[in-house]
Length: 379
Ligand SMILES: Nc1ncnc2c1ncn2[C@@H]1O[C@H](COP(=O)(O)OP(=O)(O)OP(=O)(O)O)[C@@H](O)[C@H]1O
Ligand SMILES: [Mg+2]
Image (cartoon, rainbow, N blue to C red; front, side, top):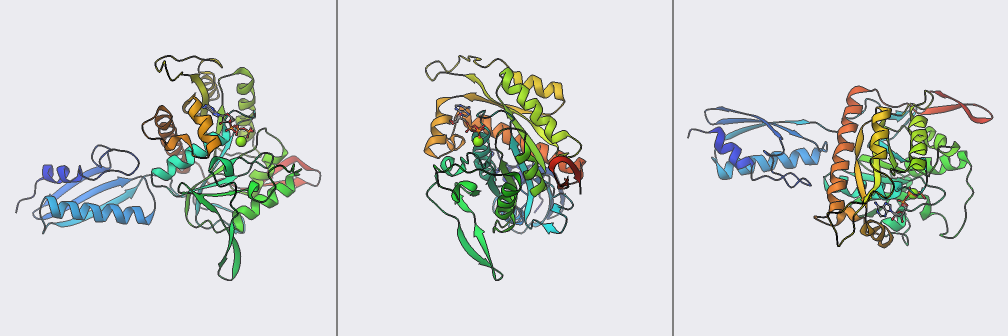
């Protein structure tokens, strides 16, 4: 039997890429097809780095070519992973974080601009794309992940791993979750100092059984203070995403947020800026956009600071409602909100890949004065 490239392509078009709604050929995953008699060699690029995803892709390709083209074809598949490449040593000296590939901090400067909303929606979108996702709610002042994921009543269980007792993250919508909110009373005001907060966060990272995680999202508290420094000290953050509304006061704080990550002593790469509440669209007038907080402020800020712009999210009632109900709005199929988060999530993945390709892993920072946080130095 003489094999034909076109037949192979047609067969591969029957394989859909999870989370993208495209087939393997459309998505550009098929890089090359070579035919030698009854042998086919296929070069594929996939974005999901897990072994499972590779195996699954291989099996699908084998099956479909055997079924659709020629059952005796000899097939060789070369898979290249073009996504969150693993930083060379993602670890704090002496404290490796086994299994966790990328830690992404979501920050803002100003409070209430939508960090937690963005974190939750990014998380479920990444999970839908096939990544293994964890969320660490580091907002010690007002943890909101348990509510946004509808698990406020749950408590992490203890599991025994190699004779050690570890916390098992709570799971919701395919996302693993730990929050300081699981350990405090809902209406109890907790006064945290930097070192206490970093100790609690440390435990949630190192004394928890996360398993394999491609993306760990960190929902940070608002501001650019002492607590942020403690968090950066507690773990090697791969990159930061800064959320802002287009409003002047929010932009000023976002600028500080970016500056905080970029200062020499912290030096966490900023993956980009997200504009939240970019415009309001009433349900009954879907084509109208009202720029309540100003137009493209965060986009312009990104340009000004020469950091990537990751996309914008409209102000819509369903986002707020979804947050309160505990089912992130991006899970609602075929909505403007879902599309917006898909676009942003793809950009975050891409910027993470760029970052990991171009810059060495982040080192944890160390506070070097007894007085606390005024002077910091890289380890
Ligand atoms: N695009 C949006 N459309 C409608 N409501 C939104 C949107 N983004 C966020 N909200 C709502 O605004 C409120 C604040 O959002 P969120 O809690 O995510 O902000 P935050 O930056 O995490 O706040 P904090 O600084 O207190 O941690 C929430 O009630 C949320 O549901
Ligand atoms: Mg928040």
